[in-house]
Image (cartoon, rainbow, N blue to C red; front, side, top):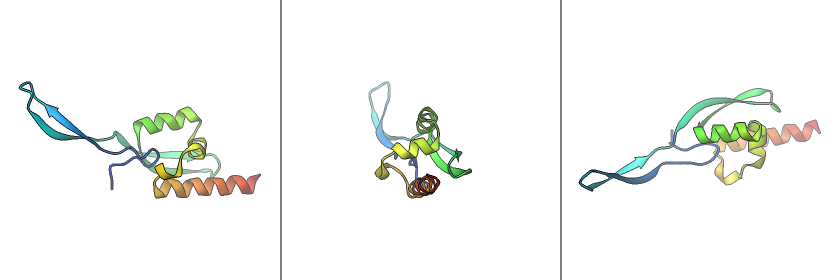
Amino acid sequence: MSRRCELTGKGPMTGNNVSHANNKTKRRFLPNLNDVTLQSETLGRGVKLRISAAALRSVDHRGGLDAFLAKAKDEELSAAALKVKKEIAKAQAAEA
């Protein structure tokens, strides 16, 4: 399981630990990932994703998973999220 957000593509970054004596050692800054189940209104079911806390706030801000995925760029999404996006688009097309 990779340490990458499935919705935003946010992943680990590198940097330095800096001691009081200004010694520098390499470290990793990991994203704050959470396993969540987001409800899709169009599909009428939950979708399990591993997303960052910032992405969870963004989903809430945009009005839910369906609205977030509609605006999201395909290259940022994971394979699972891309599959859900296509399912939602297909369901919305059939509904309209």
